[in-house]
Length: 322
Image 1: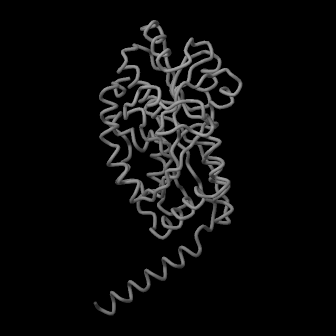
Image 2: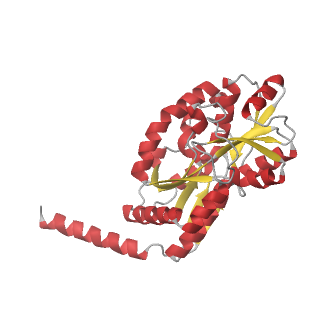
Image 3: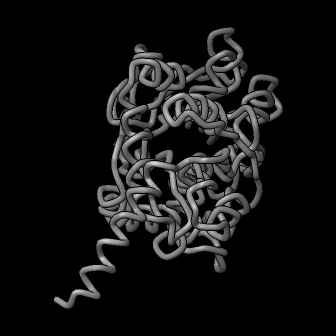
């Protein structure tokens, strides 16, 4: 190896070291591709506080909702790859969008540098208190009795909430109308008020209404029961073991492709360390989340594994046409 090449490698190594030591020198913006008040926003703000303390720098949360998370995700993909604009996304724009829309304005593999996946949201099949059902079988019978006359809400077109609901609607021939919301907060409010009779959402926004009795949880869409709702069975326990009822719902940190690896490595370490901390574990429990910590390599392995499951779910549900 020539002396020039060795010198170049040495200079690059030194510059990366300096970059890591100096970063961050100004505020970091976490873009959340969802509206305020939902589980993604709540978790992002908890992370912003923790990152700010660990990095000794201001961390700002900016909500950019719309197009099932694509607007905010595209904004990050097109941002300067300097580590000062990062994405904190729920599953829709990461795992599902490319199966639902003919033209997605970014490519997860080519335009985003994955930092980490820090948790998975547990979806819950919920109804308004006036729906005459106390379990999934009774709910399906009620839905069949009202075939063609009922609707269901979701936390946005293209979300796991939407796709799993649409899969259930199509598989069990319920003929219901989809009512998509822009974020989880408004969906939970309308469900509690009876504007929509049922849907699939996450625990965070639903839990106050569950505790007050305005919303009834019938089943959790997970491999096991969750501590926040220990008496609520899984869909498998309720007699519905379809793998589509355990669709991926991960929360992912990412940066624009081209972000220096030394910065990505630092952010990966910090975000995963925060995920394992006592305060964040408590926040996960409060929001009904499961730990699913993974780095970029582990994320991409999972992405490839679940991609065909999602494609099958979209094909069966007809959600791409919804």
